[in-house]
Length: 424
Image (tube, rainbow, N blue to C red):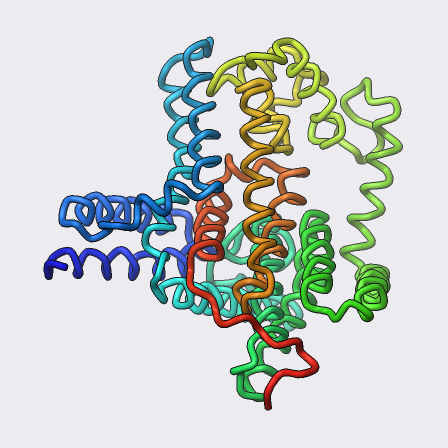
């Protein structure tokens, strides 16, 4: 390999490590690092940095599904009723699907994946420490918080939903290393376990958000299925459910969120006005899903076209002020968004992509800590996609593309020994 090609190869890997760190910290830095990474990939391609890798990556089922899903976005742009500027903006957002094969080329056969994992862990430790510090700052009445703060409990760098989803992934990352890496020294194992417990406490008590509760519980259940010996799986699953139920019952913020969920369900039974008690039906997921489904039924086969969501949704949504709230940006459900814009073909491509991811990650589940992380990350995406639209959100669409590529293409440890027989 030519010296320039080798330099560009290492530059691209180092940029991915930087991206893994800045994703939980800053949207602006995420955009900048991603742009520089793409430029490094283009220059590396010209210099021959990736010779022999593309053929393997492009044959991978997940990569083919990613390209097909993006192709459905391009195809739906042919009949979109909105200006090309709006359609182009949506195509640019969904271009994160094409980042996955770029990330895969860098991770394949290299150790950059492990370094990215360490960088992400450092960023999440920083987030966790600042979140705890923010809580203590308020308890002692020290005045205005001097550092970044997004609001929503003790969320720091991102809004509470993104904060809790990333913290759920951090729990999976740290717990998987504790359970599946026999090389860890005892002090490191205990430290990672303590971080995982602190992150769970952060989600359940400090940063209120129903999405975080759901992603955390789903990730823990899948991790138990992956790592527990068969005879202990049912007791472990039941124990996790019981512990989470106890924790939620002890958390005032969780109780408030769950009580509100029940009031929203009751209000939805007659959701024909703007306000029912303290439940604003214009910013109510069940009401938004109902209106989004009506839009899907208007053009179920072709969809309304790329970039058309806000235009077609706001044209018929009731209550009329629903577009002033969350429903005007996206329907808080990934499949509904895809169905509105790209129709049946888009939904088929999205489902194929999710299934390909699940199959690929499940096949690697026994391959050390990276393999143990995969199914948990996949279920976090699935749960998150049911209550939000992560492909529309900057942090999420970059983060999951990076981590899916990392877990599918990075070399893993040799097949791990079951926990009870791991070498001392």
